[in-house]
Length: 173
Image (cartoon, rainbow, N blue to C red; front, side, top):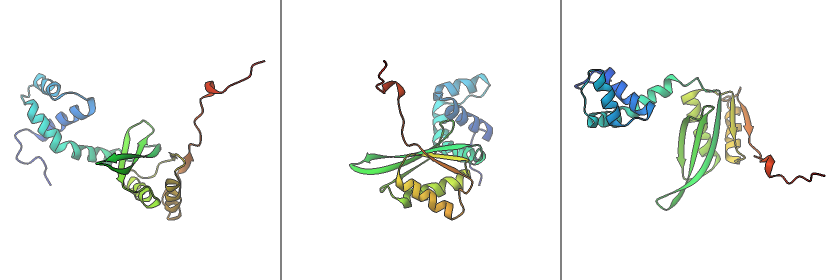
């Protein structure tokens, strides 16, 4: 499927414009100025429309292209209120702090964590290490997937306690 058919500008110009905006956190007018310096006269509102139309597509392509570059993942879940109802937000980040994926569910149970783990495995493959908190749903979902043969080479580490050594009261005599 050709997503760029019928556009006034070439595919490369659109991809570079959206890439500049997303990667370098520039404003639409900054991207417009950069393109103008290169001889391309395009409006900032056109760049806005390109970002709205192609931003998600370019992100999906980037995720597929960089899927095996992750050594360790950190996973956590938190609950948030949306329109007066509580939901659980699962989040996975890589060793460099980039968000791999997020997953919003109404319940925090093994099935939700299991589906999130499977989704991550499908998108990014198997990491060497997964670090989680003590959430029982995540641990049981991870064991369930290991029994099925997924994440067989992955080490599961659990953060048990984060200690501030300078807060410990020491008797110095």
